[in-house]
Amino acid sequence: MPVTGWMAAAAATLALAAPATIEGTDLTDFLKGTPAADQVLAKGGDDIVFGLGDDDRIDGGPGRDVLHGDGVCPPGAERPDACTDDDDRTGGDDTLRGGDGDDVLLGGRGNDVLEGGAGVDSLSADAGNDRVDGGDGDDEVDGGTGLDRIEGGAGDDWIATGAGSDTIDGGAGDDLIATESGNDRIDGGSGDDQIESASGRDRIDGGSGRDDIASGPGNDTIDVRDGVRDTVDCGSGRDTVRADRRDKLVSCERVNRR
Image (cartoon, rainbow, N blue to C red):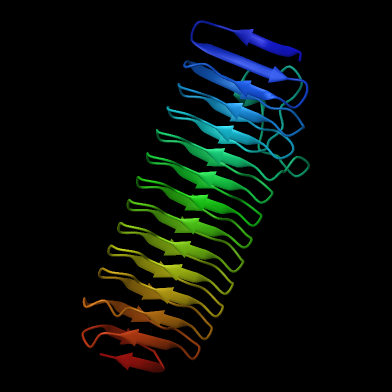
């Protein structure tokens, strides 16, 4: 299979003309896929990868990697700044794995799977019904629109989603979770979490820890019965709350205290 590109002492740039397995080096690589479904193994180093079209599988390996599931690169591009995330025509159902290191994962359009791995990662799923796992570390996760399933993992995570009925598990750590419209299921996990939901019939479980929860319009179900003092602002709607006697509740209609 033809390979085009250049090799240098500290970097490698590879682009293939047909679907294939593309392997980087343990140096700093710039790797491009094809319009077809590719498998990219970036290996070690601080790599930049563009999957381009179709359903790609990209493994960043160790290092501080930037992985684009989609994107557009002009023919013969030898530098990442020549490429863009303009993926209106090239979106696919991609799988991105960051590996160890502080990685940036950009899924683009399509139903993507993003796994940050260990490190302080930034994961953006964009449009589609995506599955996102931040892994260990203080991660930043943007689910975008669609029916997403998000796990923050261990660490103090920032998790946000767009319109759509999402399922979110903050995991261990002091997390900040914010959702937009949709019937969301949110579990803060262990830690002192801040949870904000928008319109919809949401189900919120603060988990263990001193949580601060604000639910938006809609008939929500909220559980903060964990033996420590939590704060819940139910907002508008006819909400149901399961709480401890020491919890602070505001504008909550149906309350079951213990």
